[in-house]
Image 1 (cartoon, rainbow, N blue to C red):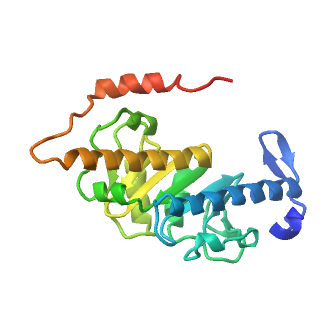
Image 2: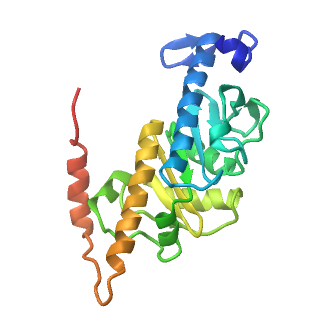
Length: 240
């Protein structure tokens, strides 16, 4: 079933962490990842992080990057609409044209260990990207993104220039703002990348709200306070 829907891979074996994997296993992994990707893309709309088909989501499965297609409403995507490219951008799955922001996604995968990338046009984050070069340290959760969140200089969407600007802003970080554009976050899982996007939007909304009071300026954290928070975050949550 998975091979029929996703296309046979000419009997090729794919080397994974646990050894060689057959084409059926690869297809099944891609099918599961695509389902998760579509659900995340729909959630960006439901959570108000994008409008229409703006923004995009991708997941890496082996050497294949599954990515939302260009200009297709997320509620219309099905299992048969799978869109995948390799790390050079060559399409290897599906017939729909990949997102116009493909250079942005590929740049992250080529330079980091990311397994998922989320790009949105979230309102508060985009507003902040027009005001500052770095999100002020309004909350310690900036540590969850690696430190103060930088703003990548503006460049036309879908260009290598934008991808390069983004990489500079992402250095040592797992999220950044794109000037007059939106957000980019990545993670080892799609859930983690999405959570980082939501957290970034929340911090931007918090800073805008606190900054809106007349004759008052919000108290900001010091670099030392952020470092202390980062150390505590390493041991946050349940241990299994």
